[in-house]
Amino acid sequence: MLNWLSRDNFEFPPLEQALHEPNGLLAAGGDLDPRRLIAAYRHGCFPWFQDGQPILWWSPDPRTVLFPDELHISRSLSKCLRQGQFRITIDQAFDQVIQGCAGPRDYADGTWITSPMQEAYRKLHHLGIAHSVESWRDEELVGGLYGLAIGRLFFGESMFSRSGNASKAAFVSLVQRLRAAGFVLIDCQMPTQHLHSFGARSISRAQFTEYLARHLDQPPLFDWTTQADCQSLT
Image 1: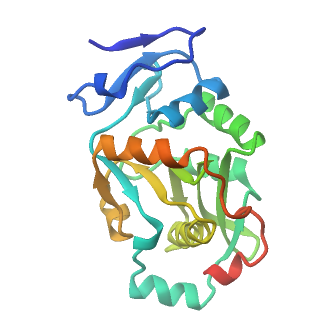
Image 2 (image 1 turned 90 degrees about the vertical axis):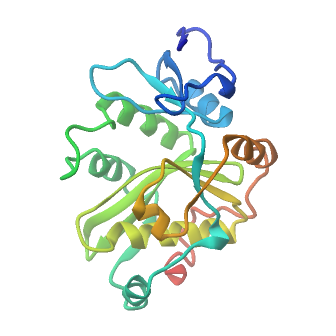
């Protein structure tokens, strides 16, 4: 039976109560209050729903993750990075990045990054929890990604690209900077061929929650969002 959340209670049901079909559906309802969103990620679940649906909360098993030390960079992408085709920044254009991620895709109808979702993550950005990484060509934003950083874990949400390798360059820069700052895991949520090409793999929900318990309250080694040396990482 699906758990329904009330607006005045920020607690989530145990992850073991998530449905097997569809995989990981844990609860519905509630709202996108920043306190609830932070509680969700700390608990091990995330919101994902379409327009016209109630807010749905997910904790899939297995969980797709990337360990920073296992990052794989293809030869073609490595060549692109060495050539310096993109200028990479952090937290310089969060609104533009989330709007880009919410844009139409050739392979999907509609978007799950609805206007209320965008506004909710903007609030998290203003709180210093949600971050964006941007790829620029000259002064044009051509790709990027956003997600949440809590402790030494990064929870990836979405990326977009308007030029070949633009989002990949942003992702590689993010992973390298997180690795330097002592982050131990990047949550990719669901498997895709794109993520697997970078070295992402699946772990059990139980393993994922162990990482949450150990590293959510462990501070990074340094402020990885500062712009100093950002370019050298690509």
